[in-house]
Amino acid sequence: MKIPKKHTLFYNEQKYNYVQFDDVLAFNEFIDYQATMLNDHNQQTWDFHKDNASVTIERQKDWFGTPIPNNIEELESHNSFLGMDLLKEIQPQIKDKLSVYLEYLAQSELPKPKIAYNDRGLGVFSFDRASMGMFKIHTVNRSTPIQENISKLNIELGKKQLQTSVKSVYAYFKDKQSSYPSLQLYIMAGANANVKGNNILFVGLACAELVAFMEQRGISVEVNVMLGSHFRGQTALSKIRVKRFQDKLDTNQLLLMTSDPRYFRYRGFKALIVMANYFGYKIPQGLGSLTKSLGNNFVEAINKDGFVFEQSYAMDKAVREVSTIITNYKNKLDGNT
Image 1 (cartoon, rainbow, N blue to C red):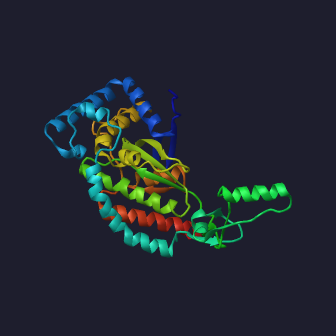
Image 2: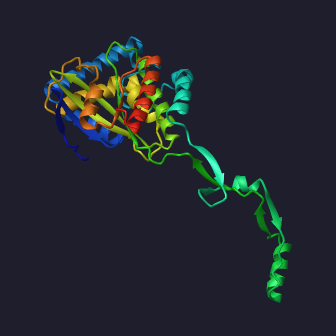
């Protein structure tokens, strides 16, 4: 397994220790491998949280979200978002909330390109459009007796030349701006202890809608998840890429990493302990905290062109995050920053 490089930077009098991962698989492999090499203090901290997880399950608390896991083994092997019933309930609500904002933004900020047709060969040939006026013609080549016989034979065999009365059969995007820059999106995963498990869902769902909105307008989007905590004057953090610019968004993976309390409050906790250990720190038993604007400050330090989706544990706040990012993106295009 490739050992990732350690990075340390100072920004606004804060110290950030972080590691970058190209995908979720590389991140999970690293965490599981490094968890076998914890120092005594961090091992005791991890044992404490495993024991606490067992007690939470036994008491049927929904701290890990719903459905409640049956045992620790389910938490350890959890690699697929399981809150689909809740997803079906919440997704239409957040779509409905977002629709008012997105309708306005689509008209005033980032209109979606419309398909138009031309007869100059510009764009992609549309068979569906051509077929609306398609007809067959019978031509006989009489240049030689052989060619005449071939032409007659093709007619008998049904091999007739097809033409269309529709002239504009080449499709292209009208008024499409090819100069839209790509969007690098960063999402702060997880939640502090006082947040109910299912409320973590809003972050990932709103982000998925944002990605769809931007990509429908020809804007390439990269999505990175940040998982970390602040303790004793410094931050230990992982930056995991969950979507490359050219890839289709894997909603399951996004929800797993950003919005699944079953993942974050077990494997995510393990990751926080491992990252502290990797940089030589002894993490507190409470695992530190997600301080206000931790994600914004970190992204501002490593990529000033990045956009941050901070913690949003209520539907209205998540919707406002989406609207704010789209508006800020457009302002950057217009040079209003």
